[in-house]
Image 1: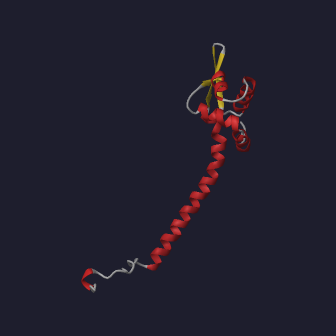
Image 2: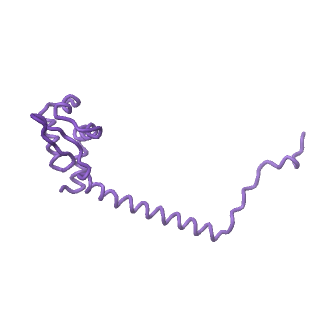
Image 3: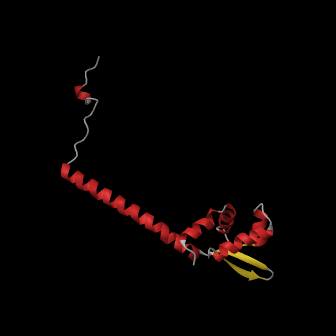
Length: 126
């Protein structure tokens, strides 16, 4: 199974990204993808081979056609790699929130801000 960095390189290619974006809406044949992209059928097949090799898509044969679809499991290494950054940020956010709560508790109750406009009974009319 490819590592996350290889998957990022695979996804960085605009043609492969366009193929995955189309497959996000459902399975498609090579001819469906060729009609969508400004490249030849052999070039589409080459890009699909890379996506298949990296486990991001699967293909099943229907007669003379191959139907491609996204394989969510193929994104697992990338998801795991990215989640480390997400978890670190969540931990930092939790710590900051706890620090803020601790500081607020040590300051005591919050006083409402002073009202810049005097209440109606204390106003002086011109």
